[in-house]
Length: 279
Image (cartoon, rainbow, N blue to C red):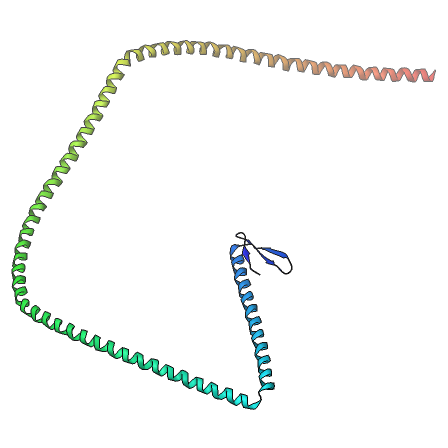
């Protein structure tokens, strides 16, 4: 049986003898991969165990057949043959080792000759280098003097460059100041233009202001009239409230008199009823 990944989280395998396909789902791809690895391990372990079982069965069967047919002499002969084969194998190994050692000797001789030639070349190169050391020293002295001269020249140039940089810095500051002044000048010109525009609309604003003042005076007069009317209405309301209080007082007195009359009427009715009962 072979396990096959059909998707990231699902796999299946088939049993051809049972004519059945099995499927299994997992919550993650890591679990599916782990299951596939374990499936393969179990499959290989089962195959190995089956092969070992077959080998043991075949060995025991052959051993029993040889014992029953040949007996003790065959066992001795087979043992002697095994010893001869072992000795022959050791002899072959020794021959191979001897051949390899001879080949190594030849290789070492070649390497030794190569090292001798290399040593000779190195000796010649050392002699040539020793001869050229003095020339290098002279060239080094000349180069050192030239280097000192160039350093002094570089120092002079650096000093000149520092002066140039200071002049550049001053020029940069002056340019920055000029730009600031130009910016201020543009701002002032803009303000002047705005003031000119405002001066052009001042007469219109004054006429509008006079019109608004007239409207405001008319509104104040209307407001004064309304205040007079409000005060008159308040006076009328006060008088109305006074009359209402006076009417309430008179109505209360009338109700009291009426209550007295009603009480007298009730007494008179009870007297009449009593007279009728006595008669």
